[in-house]
Amino acid sequence: MSTDVPQPTPRRLTAVLTYSYLVLHLPRGTSRDVARQILTEHAEYGGWELDRLRLYPDGRRDVRLRRKIIRAVKTM
Image (cartoon, rainbow, N blue to C red; front, side):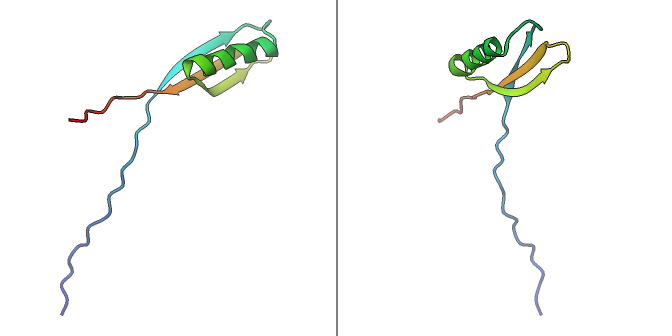
């Protein structure tokens, strides 16, 4: 004779990442070197990372950069 006692399910902590986005529109005359330099400076000095790059047939580029939003957590 056993009674069915529901077992507690383990809880998982899930981190919710929040990002801020920056969209850059590079005109069609922009060379690969200049585009690389612009993206490198944003990454090094602003903490941005590449999220999406779209290269159009006419040569223009749409670049979406993202970075994590760090929220301060109360300690007391």
